[in-house]
Every structure is written in C-alpha cells, then in structure tokens.
Length: 247
Ligand code: 13P
Image (cartoon, rainbow, N blue to C red; front, side):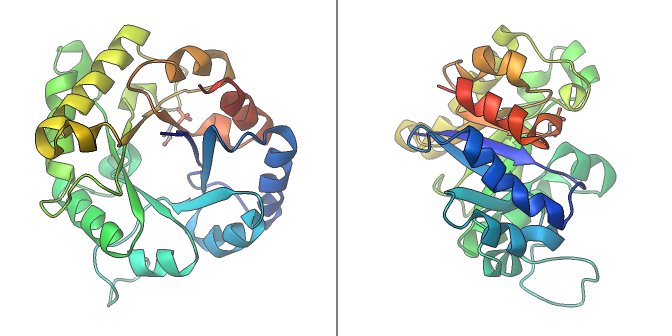
C-alpha cells in the first residue's frame, strides 16, 4: 500500500492557496510511493480539485452531514462533497468531537453516508492526556474505533487516523513505542472485525505534531501507513519535507 500523506488545513486558507498544489509538486513528485491528500475548508473544495488537476493530488473534506439533503443550515452532505470531485472526508476529528458534539454514533452515521457517496472516510480516534496517563489509551481508542465504524462497513474504502488529542498542535508526540503499540492495537481491532486480509489493506495514519524532524522515524513504524498533518501541512515546503522522508 502507498503511504498516505494528508494535510488537514482546518479553518485556514483562501483562494490564493489554490497555488499551493503546484508549489508542492515543484518540491516533491514521487507519486508512485506516496499518495498526497489535501483537506481544505469546504468553500475551497471545488477550486482545490481544479487546482490539483494534473498534479495527482487528492482533495478531501473535513466533515460532512449524515443525511443526503434537508433543512440542516450550515451543513454539507457527503453527496455534495462528492459533487466537488473530492475523494475523502475526515470524520470524528478530536476538534469536532470536543467542540461540535460529534459522538461515536454520529461519526458512524457520517462514515456510513460517506461510503454510500463513494468517498473514503478517514475516521479519527485518539485519547486525551488523562486517558493516556491512566493507562487506558488502547482501551479507549479501541472502543472509539469500534463505535465510530458503522455496522454496514466491510473494511473497504476506509482509512483510520490515530490522533492523540494531547499531541495535536502542542509539539508533543508520544514515544515511538507508544505510537507503534497503538497502531498495532488498531490493526488488531480491525483484523478481529474484518479479518486480517482486509485489515492489512487499511491505511492507519498517525496525526499529532507530525513535522519534518520527526516524520522519518514515525512513518517508518510497521503499522503506520501515513500521516494526518495539521500545522506542518499548511506550508508546502514542510509538507514536501515530510513526504520526502516517507517510506
Ligand atoms: P498538528 O499537526 O497541528 O498537531 O494537527 C494534527 C491534526 O489535528 C491533523 O488532523
């Protein structure tokens, strides 16, 4: 499987940023080895799909609603995301779980809707600092994973991101052993649910203060299939530097 390097732009970006894919490709072009995904804010999805034409860079949304359409002011459906030409949707990011009420149940419904629209959900899980310190990271992460993946999922068209909440935007990262242990645990949970053959095809991304200086060691870990990158994904030179050290 290819390494997936995904930039989550969060609530950053304007139309000048549509020049970034070309800038990125001037710095990194090994698309046989590494798959690149950029997840801009929703207002830029279509323009970014256009800006990436010819650059072999995929575009994803950062959220969607679980219904196809309706009276849901301010929301965007998976079908609408698909209509822009995007390919992925990040779901259950810890910022959405903490600030916008996305529970495991809601994430599961959104994941189901995303797959039904022909898009690939990136389902995020990860523990808080208190949970990590209590030694319950695997248990909590495993439960989040189990409950955020809908009943109708078969393990295809699915990406998982392990993002410890305390590592996001803080400069803190778990030890390599802790990242490896979590990814191994997630792979094991997926194998129990979908079988090892399917589980082995699911990309499991690491996210949380991933940057050029730590990416090589983290991305080399056995069950780490790529990265979900916040801050370091806003600038194309740092995103390219991360892609350059990906296995
Ligand atoms: P940072 O890379 O800024 O820590 O953010 C990670 C993240 O939340 C990606 O979804």
